[in-house]
Image 1 (cartoon, rainbow, N blue to C red):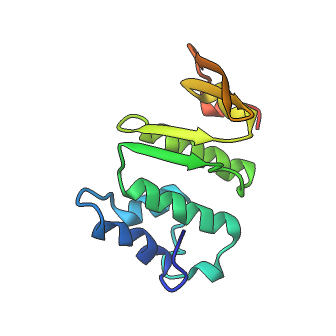
Image 2 (image 1 turned 45 degrees about the vertical axis):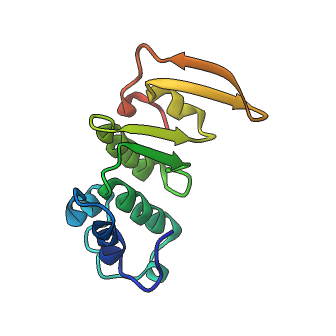
Length: 137
């Protein structure tokens, strides 16, 4: 949840109070496509932009495990692709788990775990995940 009384940059910088090795907020905001929006408040942003603020703050925390629930759900396809590229970049240092109904994301994942009625029905390693740009979004 982003805080409505803080600007975009303040929302991301807030993580510096929690962790010592936080990533640079300006760099992360640029990577999620929010450069120039740093001084806006959440109510001045679209739903997709607010979602990207949340993603930026999560990435800025530099966690060992990043849990993403529908990270591209409120985004247009081009922005969604850019966010997936950023999350893929995060997997070099961290584990990223994406929960989604978008079956196309499975094509780029290293491992796919499918659930049905709360039970695992498939758990496979994707031996040759596609490059994100190869998927027809």
